[in-house]
Length: 295
Length: 133
Image 1 (cartoon, each protein chain N blue to C red):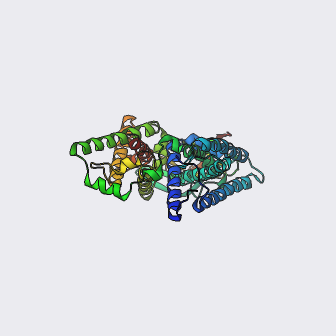
Image 2: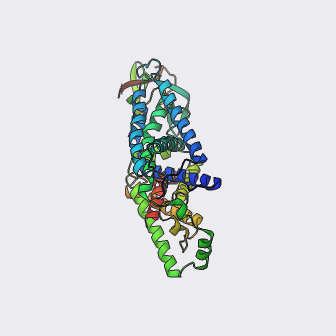
Image 3: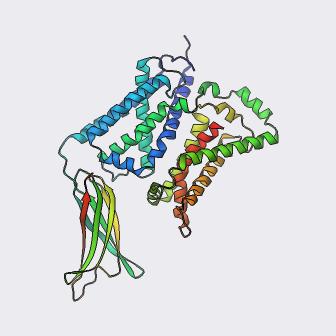
């Protein structure tokens, strides 16, 4: 029977959880910026919230049997059921963390409202988690480059034209993904409502979270083209520089979309504009990461 | 894609923590279901001192839903009354106010709401309407 070493088990589990969180973000983040969902969660009766949690469990179990967030396929119902519990937990924790980050849950929020918001926002996250492998499938363990691969890569960085082409494709992928995910969010009042309540420190936190999430989706979640990404040449060849440049592209896309929808007309204070760009930059960064994996 | 191996220790740990999180969520929600639920009761109360901005006066008002049920489209009216007549007023809408939630509003007046003169100005803030979802 095949077996894993202890360190490999921990590393594999870590990648599975990052993949789960990444898949959850891809599906869940648009609804995170929908105030009607906040209200539905806050107004729902406790019986409805409990029922929502129970109902969400069923499709999550079913999807775990065909997709899931782990690299191995769940063939046993017991595994699917246990992974579904994990998907629900990661979903509600992700949603709770982001709701706190965006100040939709504060210390002043009544517990009942907070629970409703977390459950209703956590449901799409959980569905995204169990669809993670379907979105951008790949084998995390196989996709992790070996030392030999890294050496080979270092020795053959590629011709300048190929590097430029790859970098252009990465930037294009980031831009396209950012627009696909954030375009529907840009014209909504939620961006302004969220950004107006954020302090400079909170904005910095959102920037950090955006960068970490973008890095995690592309370089740690073990999605399909992770090996290719590690082997990329060009100005975006290192994970850190690629993440930074892609985030700048996502911010530019966010700013352009806000301009397109006239959400920051002339005369808008620069900090208000910056706040909106950073708030919209979070879903744009998630979309940009997915876009880079798709190219 | 490989066939699922027996659960490793990290996977069991993840499952244990996840089960704890889900059970805690269910328990917290269940606790909220216990007890009586008062209908929505939004109230408006003036807080803090009047602030002067240019030639206008800003008064902060806290609107709190003292009930358990949520209220929607909460209308809050602020008025300065002199000699039993409203001489200046403003109103605001709050889209949504959950049970126990507080929202801070600011009213801006041309007249000094704290001024006292022959007519004995009085400033009033009140919730005039709301909907129950």
